[in-house]
Image 1 (tube, one colour):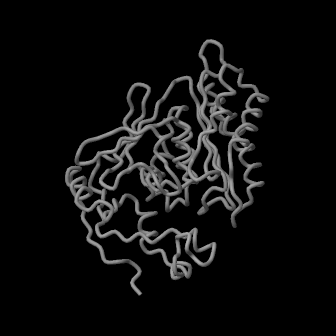
Image 2: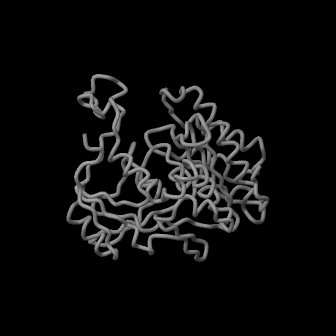
Image 3: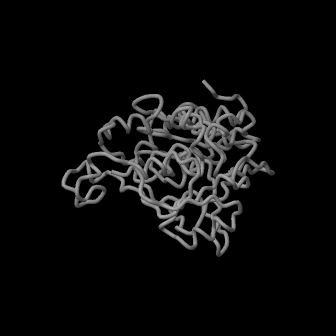
Length: 320
């Protein structure tokens, strides 16, 4: 039995070549960044994959219905020779992150402003050191899993994404990018080319997660918080709280974040917001953890991430 299906492989040297291939092949093409998702999905084999209807509601066994179908692209398009997709560009109040930037590269950015530290947190806990050296931030976003660490962080940061095709470019706000488990608004002929993160000097952010083990495990729950303080009063001017692995896609806890605006970020206020965040989530029971346990984690992680985000906004680091 072949581990991989037959496919063509191209390694274009220009963006125009990449976009032309995506336009030609559409859904039959898969861009290759780090490969930590794509290659695994292409050669994914388990007994459940041999069950008739695996990955669909028609599967005989409930567990088989949750199996992702194998990815069988006719064309794999490597992005390795496009340096414009790698690295970070700093501008006034904005960080632009290339989608080919690896988790390890971003996790090592000690110069990251407090406003984007949630993404540095997320990049530093995703997978193992070996995976972080290959996995890219863009690939983690496009994979669009509900527990994707960087997706939750960027949602809290209020980022926006630039998508390019042979017909032109468009910007998509991160809160409208994800549509469901493993799905997003990116069209088959489009490529993620830039991630833009606002960097208010009076904001701080943080991401925390809990899994069944420290490495090589997706999050049972992930929580990211972003808090901007009024420079004159020290009160909360704006806030966002994002949650992962508690819904079909990463979500914002809008009521919880809204409750903080105009308030002193006291421990009681942050704890009350965390309780509201718990009430906005609808986690499920599965083999990794119960919904009841996840609800406890949401409240705890939301509170801790808020505390760390406020500390960072005040310039205190908040690493503990």
